[in-house]
Length: 77
Image (tube, rainbow, N blue to C red; front, side):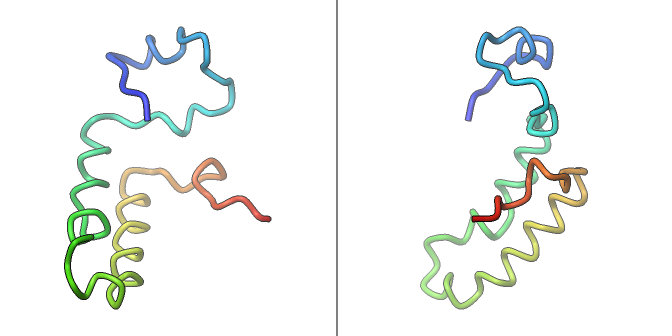
């Protein structure tokens, strides 16, 4: 994960790849994702038994911030 001051700085970064724009997240979007149970509850004893529930929360959060396109889908192997 790289943190940048602005989207302009991201696009000017020498390693920026055209077509990966969907991967750009604002700080508020990152906070929304990382404050969910999927990350917050990782040290709970019953984390594994709740992983599906937490994953559903994460998917919902992704939908709320508009990150559901091909960039975010698991590549088929």
